[in-house]
Length: 216
Ligand SMILES: [Zn+2]
Image (cartoon, rainbow, N blue to C red; front, side, top):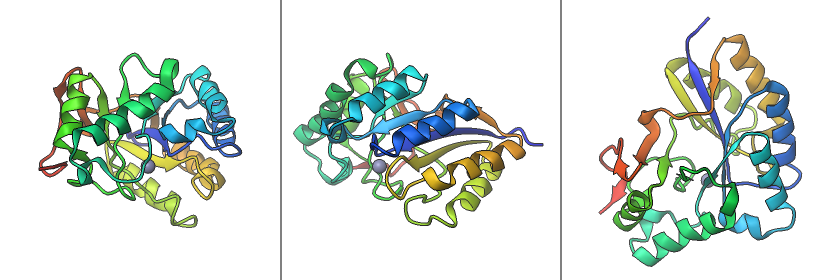
């Protein structure tokens, strides 16, 4: 047995044909998570309904930028930061948490100065976003055969692991049931909350911002 805690998150959706199946699997396992959605995905047919279903099932909906193309730290201008953050938030609309959740685009899960520009950080603080990063990126989208093992290894290593998975074609769906079984066998506790260790901003202030996560 272990006292490890695990928070699952699903990025880059909603994607019809995938997100509803992820929701089924999580529902059967009675696990609540957060879906960090891409704003422009919500302009596509059927995606708002998927966000609505996720919200109705008790999952949290977070903002994962409007376009998910150029990381905020790679474009310092204020207009870009505001349009990426608020363009997505407007589309999430009433399905947002009272405490708005935001996750920057990490360029394949990397943590570094590309995550945020100074303008983006200022906006997230002033607008009271809770900015959430991660500490377990097993690479579901690039390694369909190896990601479960890598995820379990990090989950054993971290007292509280915040896992980035993807509800996209070729993402976590095929092996998600296997991951849940493995983690359940290890006795981990599934959480919906996030530890301060992965919280960059919250409630109008910086919580835990390691050096080198903001482009200057
Ligand atoms: Zn992403």
